[in-house]
Length: 292
Image (cartoon, rainbow, N blue to C red; front, side):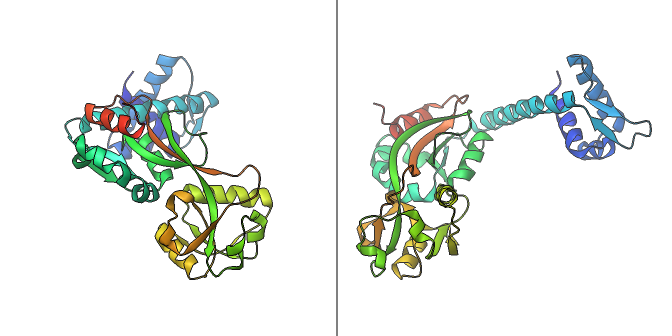
């Protein structure tokens, strides 16, 4: 089976045009036609029905099913190519969410330095959702993640390092500041300062809002938790962040929620299950997962 045939097939499924597919790959239309015929002969089924005028195509149910497999194969090939190209690189492409980077990396930096890993880290700083996509697509091989649950893509191997509550933070001058705990519904009348969509805090927040049938009055969003804590400290609104990112000098008060079945912040190391760790990546993985 020719990988290029699969690329032609997948593009044809998306573009629904032999002409556009041929133009995309800078080949002739008969080249695309021949590729589709080879695949249909190889697998013994009809994937594409072409009308007499050659101006439109019908994708059969078998063709759509085969495209699912074609996408999986092309994705694996893409990852393999990325891994082979990365082998000569002495650095480790390492995904690091900002909150985890600021609050956890300094605690293991001495160990990373003593093992010769710290100078080799090429850090990619993104939100956890973006880093998961990059991991799946082979752009990075190791990452730390913040997760709302362990129900994630089966290709990802996860080791939970720690778990942290996600709590409401308010100004020290806010009426809630004296409370030992609150229910999520009590936030319905508050101005809310949230994180951007690529952070798991937002997913956890949306889950709670849905469970409680309320819509929060979000007045501002930021990808920077330090900015959020500063705005909350000025009593401009309340927010919802993991206790991993809360410190004594933040001038905010952290209040636990009293609701049942609350989300929590799962702090994890992750790699792809089918990725063979290099020697340096294995040292890093063992440090992250606290193996001796």
